[in-house]
Amino acid sequence: MSLLDLQRGFRDYILSGAPEIGPRLGGDPAAGLAVYHHAYRAQLFAGLRDTFEKTWAWLGDEGFDAAARRHVEAHPPSSWTLGDYGEDFPATLNTLYPDDPEVAELAWLDWTLRRAFDGPNAEAISPEALAAVDWDTAVLTLVPTLKVGEVATNCAAIWGAIAEDQTPPAAEPLPQAAAIRVWRQTLSPQYRTIEAAEHHALSLVLAGEPFGGVCTTLSEGMDEAQASQLIGGLLASWIQDGLVCGAE
Image (cartoon, rainbow, N blue to C red):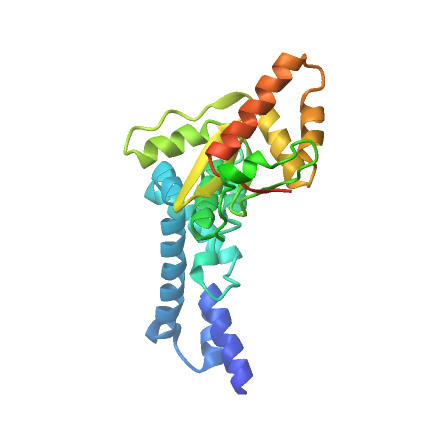
């Protein structure tokens, strides 16, 4: 057996634990190889529990470990660091819990908040810079940690209650479609549930639409007072939350 064949066989056993692979390596899985298989899985389980802490609390040990086992078996890590492992865990949960959409949404929030903490730095725009902005033509640059995800349930309320060591509310659908924006302000990851108008506005800004064009699109069907209140409120909220890091 070549060294390459030995390495590939060892990899296959660590990933699958299939007993038929052991004899190919000249060993007995029960006498040693199984140690590596279990240690590998234990590290991935521990990483998922750490990253998806609130989802773990919601599902409980048994439910979370069953989902983690399914995910580990189907998705071996592909990065040099375990900190990157779990990006597609919400998709696994969506498959396992099709009738409980809050589970995958909680996992998305867990993952996105963790990535916001690790994300690149960006300074929010200063009040002095705002005074010189031509808001009709300016294209806003938003902080790179900003992520927006659509949600259909009260997952944000559940996540917040668990984070505060309170009894979480029962899962329930939202009365209308909404989204959650996640970002980091200074060193603190933040999240906020947003309505359809803000979601639409952020989508336009992220696509590079000048702010004047965003205003025109949002104000369709509104009178001037309504449009001004909506757009002014959104811009004020973005600036207060430190979302805007450039306007040119």
